[in-house]
Length: 236
Image 1: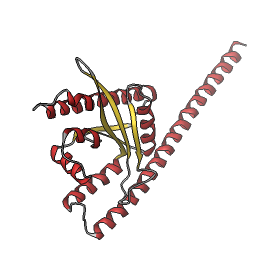
Image 2: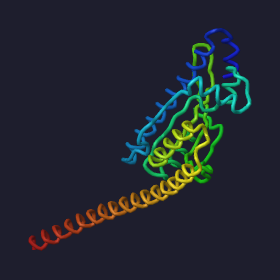
Image 3: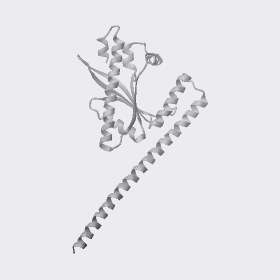
Image 4: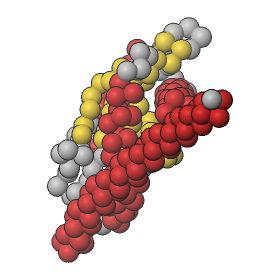
């Protein structure tokens, strides 16, 4: 990516970089949709409820650079801001999160640069999510540019909580009243309990259905055996 910047040191450099990030988002989103469809075809179950994508706004990029002590420049933006292009995968159950992370990591044309597991190690605020920073090759007419995309994987409940936390953070500029932060953290514990119970309930339902299917097969076998015995007795 940095090599590509040097080739576009003109007024269009910003548009060029944004083009690359948008292209990377399309590549990753398409890949994830295909993985989801394949999983549904093979296992009759789709782990992804829905996919969200976004490009970070110029204002947010500048704020993040200044907050981390970097001068505002395209070079620093590309080097230090890893979540300019973001994809969020929303799942039903926590087990889907690690299944998807493994599937993404097995893609030969995606390079996993880093992983942050905020599910096993939540933030102090109670935030839980699974973050993967990947790079995807963007094939241009005269070059190939590796471009970074951040993938966040979380359950529906985690996403609901994180959306509220995000609104509170920006409304109070990171200095929310203590009682709000406390209540929000308590809600995070409730979300974790809900996810655990929903996963347990889903596994119980699946086990029950498997037993029913197995019982139906056994019943069919018994019926066939009785018919064979009846036919044999009649022939005698």
